[in-house]
Length: 181
Ligand SMILES: CC(C)(COP(=O)(O)OP(=O)(O)OC[C@H]1O[C@@H](n2cnc3c(N)ncnc32)[C@H](O)[C@@H]1OP(=O)(O)O)[C@@H](O)C(=O)NCCC(=O)NCCS
Image 1 (cartoon, rainbow, N blue to C red):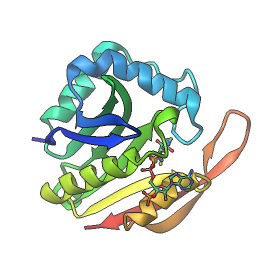
Image 2 (image 1 turned 135 degrees about the vertical axis):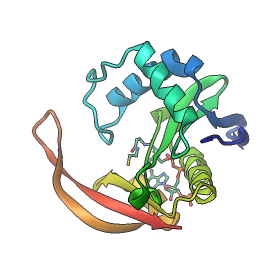
Image 3 (image 1 turned 60 degrees about the vertical axis):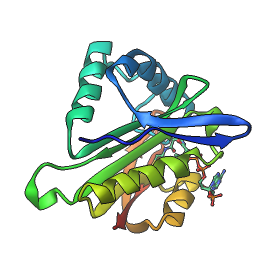
Image 4 (image 1 turned 120 degrees about the vertical axis):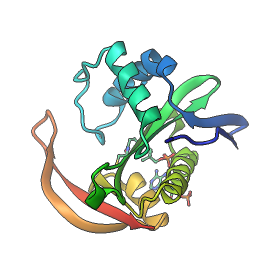
């Protein structure tokens, strides 16, 4: 089962809890994801683009919990969800060793070490679950994220030119990065 043990860490006199996402989180999670889309240009959706219903989100969370190749974890502070981290694996045997990672934290909680904890927890889970290659894509101007990934041992494998197009007409290059475990 794709589950982690719940973990607690301290930052700024507060406790952050890392735990699996459950179907009961669906409604709050959708609000957090919508907020993230307004807060950061570094994710894939434009503000207001998310159209998932609570029912669809519940099905998504349940499928992650049941899957052996996917992990979906949340960070909570003061009982509120403030970020998510997902490892999306492959069931096909030729790709079973490989998974793609995505991570996002609300602006007020960035730069406090939560991203590093999310990543370390996900990497440990991947190792324990037969994954030996973690990939991710990151905007070439997302210096905080790139710093974090490099510090954890990820390498840049290539540049995807004009990979994203923002609503203001700006094209953004991405790096594809990987960590071999
Ligand atoms: C990218 C993101 C996940 C990083 O998580 P975080 O909690 O903010 O990062 P951390 O506080 O754990 O910092 C980890 C490392 O990043 C680096 N870092 C932190 N803040 C930084 C900043 N403002 N500029 C450059 N590097 C920075 C530090 O080197 C730090 O290393 P250290 O632990 O050795 O000090 C988070 O900022 C985020 O969700 N951003 C918005 C969405 C996003 O960009 N997602 C990633 C898409 S690929």
